[in-house]
Image (cartoon, rainbow, N blue to C red; front, side, top):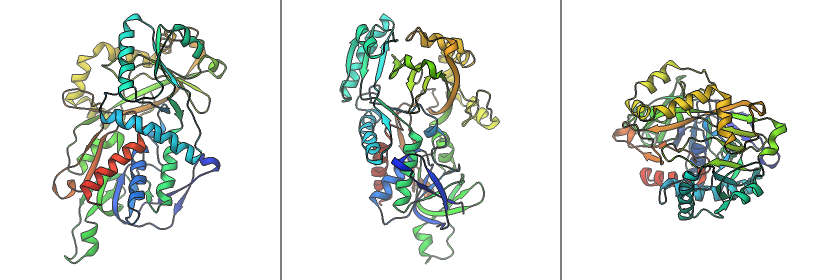
Length: 442
């Protein structure tokens, strides 16, 4: 059996010290696959609602929040961008409020530094005004449109014709938030099994019809190392591998995950005075995750970017990271080619900027002309688990589904939890727990 992970908070909830548990239970009422921020939030919510049940989180890495949850921009989004009435819009607005409240309760530091979405071209102003109306429909607090003079009052080095001011937007270290969820889960009696990469799920072959455990925990989940647990039901929150885990369970691999890497630049510390809060472009509705922006971080650094290019490895955070299997999976998927062929010029532009710092800086200079190539360094990268359908359409909203058959009927898959999943994690967790209760009759 894989070792179980135990977290302990430092002063003020900061940091995490982990030790191995000696007790290694192997039977659970519900097993959650994936210790990212969504999986941990859902596990936490479920164990708080059902304290008499046994829960486990299965994680292939040696720590929680190792991938998307630990490689994101750290922005607490306010809910402006998303289609009114969509699950994404509802959960983001609720989730932001819950995130701030949770951080206050746990002593996790954050900054409500605000955000300006800045129009630098006349043609962007109608889109900016439409975005303002959308934010109002989504009940985002504090929104207002401001002119060029007010932009400079808030961001002295930023140039723009008009901006949408979102004072409710903030920043936080989401890895720290996710580790706090893990501690909450364990303190409530939950078990986190690390180094447990799920490779197989099947119904148990009961030794006798009277076997109580066989009836209560009929699903066997095996790891790559040959370890196994038994459980009654499974919730998957597998992020970059959500389609593969679904396929392992006998459910549909659609929508497929196509990984897009986002590379950031970092502003040199002596130039950090150029940016006070988040500065974003007016988004292109065809590419909601594209657009260079300025993002302050909790450590005082300023991230610039990101771009968005096809990653040749699902967990490839470096420019030249490559996995033959991941690459073949991506390039043999018809949906990716349909997306690429519709957007060749955008794709080539993003690829060029991935290699050219000066090209990235030119995008940034539209907002802060003082930024030069001498002011920036190559920074970290993240990989976005972009769900894509077979027609080449980006799946924009959350997707929850299950399957049929003996194993499939006992599973709830969180198939797509795109940005703002970290912001929305506590609200998503409540929605997942509601659905799990209904499907699993907990």
